[in-house]
Length: 119
Image 1 (tube, one colour):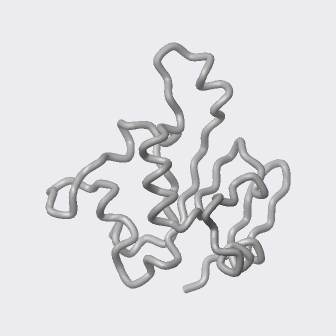
Image 2 (cartoon, rainbow, N blue to C red):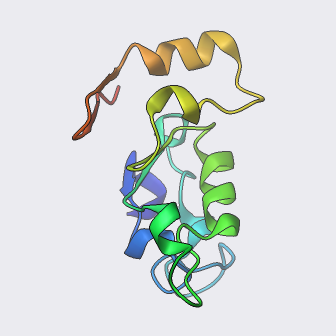
């Protein structure tokens, strides 16, 4: 199911205990299983996290950089985070035409993102 997912709501604020690292050959669901199916080009992730608040908590690291970086790679930058304005999410290496196509499918206000998935 993870290989076919086009929208992944990242668990537990993108922490290590909700999105596991691993290999395709592992028996447990993990990051490597995501975005490998027919709809991989549409794979998008959404993270509920408030980084500024997490930094005030001893030992918390939400979202975890390693997981977020892997999701950014798998999704060509289509990772939404609740504490970040959409305009600030554009990856430095984004292909302009591809990012414009994503941008046209996003509606944002101060309470939510609405993203229309093509399938």
